Image (tube, rainbow over all chains, first blue to last red; front, side, top):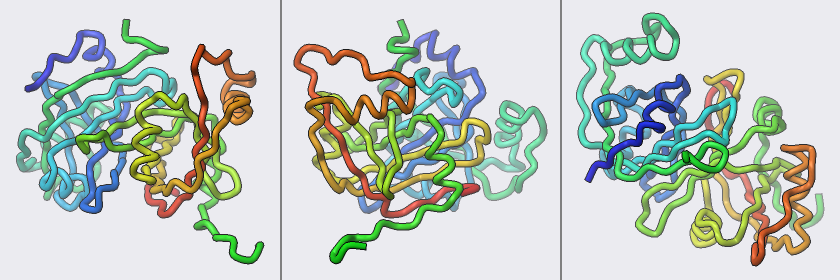
Length: 134
Length: 138
């Protein structure tokens, strides 16, 4: 069951920093990489090429954990345990371009073909700002 | 090198520079249900190993001792495209009864000794061997 993301965490994730995502490799180890994300309509959205390791992992095991963390003050963070609900092609790269504007303030400079957007349902949210979200 | 000593993998100068910053690393472990847990923690890279320390009652140290492996991520606060993902193997578990190691880590991050331990708090140090490093701009 998806959970509500608290108003404080919703405010926090409007800030511009990458999410660190953890996905499970076939051998059971965890892959961690930073990716662009946004929170919208109750879901977390990420974008990537279909050749990305994390996307292959998610197709086998849809469980994903996002660490949303302020790189300038790493005591401000929220951890989201989630699940890939579905994914869709990103024809023309509209979604990656949207994310590019969030992060870079300009059009996406990389290739816009062969991309997918992934929808993640939050199942459990925890976190802290200097100890507590209060 | 002493006879029989294992040689750890070489870390690039960029990784060494990044690890020398007073930044946190994110340690990834697995819960009992195999979902993934990500925790930002203090660390030190020294002698080719990654050293971390915890209260024994936290969950990630339990996961780490069960699986004997973890993934650690370090990212450059000044350059978001620069990051290193380090797959690590638990090489040694070292009790820290006099909290000497956590004091050393606290100095690295805060310039001061670690706080007073809470009643019943036990500290433990993990020595993690980097097995493979991947990432960007490293």
